[in-house]
Image (cartoon, rainbow, N blue to C red):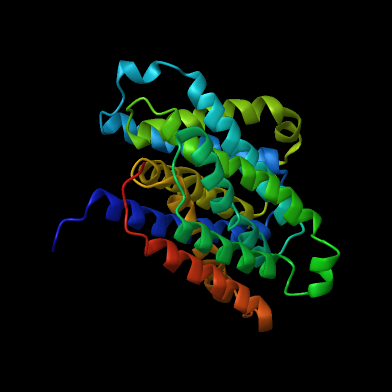
Length: 300
């Protein structure tokens, strides 16, 4: 089998990333009202930080030079903390497929941020693809109801989550901007530690008020999934891909998330979306295929 190039490995990392992230929507919706978002995010960051830290230590990845500029991890940790907290506030009222559609708007924002800070150029073809994906996302977010679109009647959950997605979109180009040569797993550990500290300080009241020993088993299952897969593994995958692909192309894989969410929902006994909502999901898939057709895989 021919050895994969750096670009191909970056694409594979983001494919796995999109499937794991999708699971957080389906599972998160089922426990979003059982535990405060700040408390949930703090404990998942803590667990993920311990696991990633042990892995990095065993692999011998820590170097003294990685301690330089610790403020960088604070910036990245703050951005991701904001994203995850607002995601779970949003999931308290937003349907999982609709929330996933909001997530697909991040490539457009990420492309703009990437140009502003890294001068990563978005070609006309990529711009067209992002537009197609954005239209598809809007159709799903407003549930294909033209009256809701005219009135801009977006749900509170979707609105809160959109703010979080802006933080996530900023995070992606900042991974490269603030990287000083440390491996992805080391950067991930630093981000998780910084995020844990920030969330503990900001959410201490919610953490103290949470009846940890009386939480339903499903809540702990979701916390472990979020910690090990969508706080640990996906951070590594995103860091890895962001160092090999342009920001807009990295975030293009968010267009797969609504489709993955549908599969997750079906696995949990949900129903297929109907009518024009499904058309919106198809458009997001087309946008991904268009972005993958771009010739250059070099992160500029």
